[in-house]
Image 1 (cartoon, helix red, strand yellow):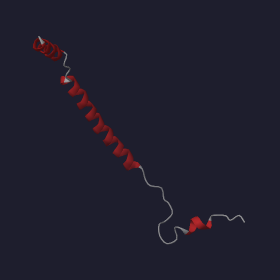
Image 2 (cartoon, helix red, strand yellow):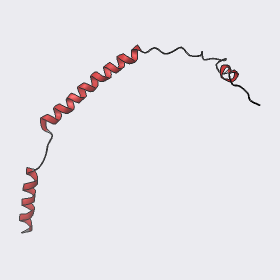
Image 3 (cartoon, rainbow, N blue to C red):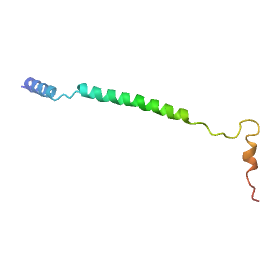
Length: 73
């Protein structure tokens, strides 16, 4: 009797198996293609950005920060 119950449970569970199939593959592939185009667009936008000129790096770079502090005594 137990063997019959296990066989019935195994037969009913195989009917309820859900597989992604072709539709799942197409959705994932479309997301991958969209990601490639978004990354290419982002790289183009980053190339357009130019760095702002900042203080020159070197021996005198730290002196400006210490001179601008005010002392309160």
